[in-house]
Amino acid sequence: MTRTTPERNNEGFLEDAWAWDPDVAIEIAAEDGLELDENHWEIINFLRDFYKEHEISPPSNRLFVKAVKDAMGEEKGNSIYLMQLFPGTPAKTACRIAGLPRPTNCL
Image (tube, rainbow, N blue to C red):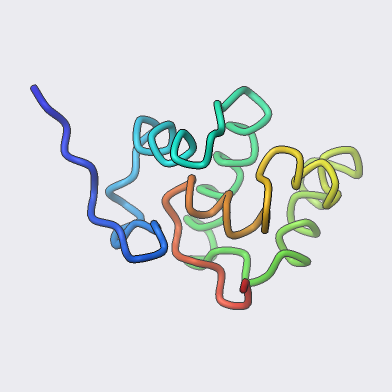
């Protein structure tokens, strides 16, 4: 049985956040040259939970880092750690892999 990839916009974000599953995350991450490990999944699952609770993606990189810091502590809630996991703009990259809408204030 062939799985069809959920529809995505021109920036690679899913059109429907609820169409996401872990296989989609692996596929999107691979497009960025990332192989997901438990550290990635911890952040991805955090973002999925954040979205379920607030019905938005963290609106900026700064708020993304702060939300991770509040939930997981200083060691993981810092921009260097998150940038190593999700290169470029961590909030944007992580939200795309997590199947969430594009953060509103991310370039």
